[in-house]
Length: 357
Ligand code: OGA
Ligand code: NI
Image (cartoon, rainbow, N blue to C red; front, top):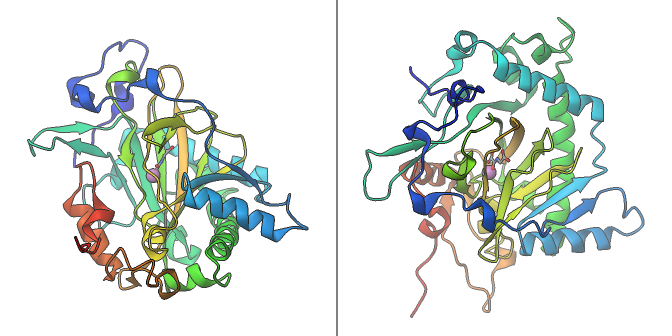
């Protein structure tokens, strides 16, 4: 199975992008128009010990506005974060043949390396490959995934044979941060603290996506990850090396997200927008590329399982707020995602109820 290796082109001798990475003019990132006014709130999870209400209010406002915030003082040990960043970055440096066993275009594989691409709206055959490479695998429960993970590089297994594997330790910590964030979000909707976890359902699907963006000779012609909203319930994104290439759309403008050292970016994903009947927003975001520096990020997703029934929660609807979306099983949402694959997606719209004229 052939998967393109954009980074192979990104050594110092390459000054131009090959055509497969070049976007049509109207889809290029217009980097000079990106704002750096910070619109993504920073939430200090320890700073409100005395005042849970203040914390809930900040989170709720962020979820109703830009749909994204960064958490600091989240309690995940810096050494562990560093261990994960080393493991993931060494993985992307492995020789191509060693990574090749994970390359696939079969999206049902649970451990996989692939490239995202973009199709043209009027010509299904034309694909533009994104300037990035993605490695995805489940992250919880650890007994389900650790024995499928690569045994190279050794950092993926921490000290050899001490199978308190760095990733499963990290996964446990991330699980607690997500639970805390979901409880704040639930309270921000005026609900009990476990309301969203309950509605995201039994046996959620936890999977991660490591994104590697090699330095790119012409960042204005291509994209690291094209604009999208995350389809799951919640995303926790760790930006590892301080390169400011994540951008969020706010008030129709692209705004750069500060790569705050040690912080996690919390991105509200589609299922929570639909459960909250549109009160909370799942933002459109993208990653651009950088001429000088490689960039690495790790997204941890909290998704419902295939059979979970999603739709506006009863508490979120009344006469003044009739349901905007229909009920569906999560697998229908996934099917729609794959149906629109490669296109500029209109996923949430596909689940909207028709409004009366
Ligand atoms: C994602 C994502 C952005 C980034 O993985 O869904 O939006 O900065 N990543 O890598
Ligand atoms: Ni995303």
